[in-house]
Length: 311
Image 1 (spheres, rainbow, N blue to C red):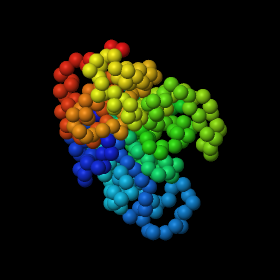
Image 2: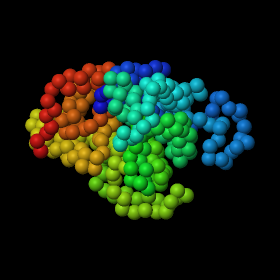
Image 3: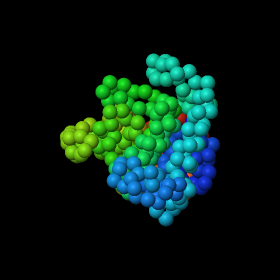
Image 4: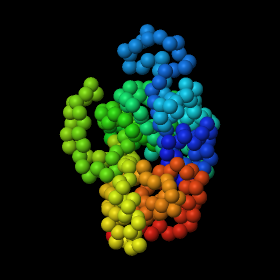
């Protein structure tokens, strides 16, 4: 399994999940919208309820990309569930002290956890209950990593779900059992955050980011760091590189994995240069739209010593 994220995975085509898993990706991101369910009667008889069966979750980057047949369930959750069921058909449901015994997505890395990012588009509050509903088959079989807030205990499974985009932080924070975690802002991990008063719970101030809320943190790579790569002839003293390293260290001290997105894919030489800068400054997860190229690049880097910047 490789430490890379298939960014906007649904844009890789109809066999996107198969491609990502075939290449061994440990992280897969799916843009998700709430839309009309093509399999339901077109009525509003249950309008106003939290879960309206006339609607479902679709995978697509933009509204124009949405297809009624391309549901999150059909293209992602059903195949993942089938793989896990097959790999765990002889599973022993006995606690081994660190959680139930399970086998993961990858047979050659059966103890490794695969992370699924759900990038909630439009209204995350509306998407939230539909996502939890789709996760129920995984929950019932102990396939999800979760955190029990009252007991402060983790249970680890073959899949971890991270909400990003417009995921409602209050929903994550006030979940008594967190089956869905929050993608924290990587550039603001040292700044306490606030939960606004809602139906889920009261206002809470000065909350510190930690891995029980956000096992992963992501931010768009600021332009100033991209520009600084042009002046990184002395990488160990480059201010941009050193700042990136300090951001990654803050995350690591909190037990949070780091990921950057939104940086240039063209020209190719700049993209690869940024990959090197991010790796050598301590980024944990490579975010990519170029799955085969990134896989090959990471494999080559694994043969080399990782030279973290000495700043």
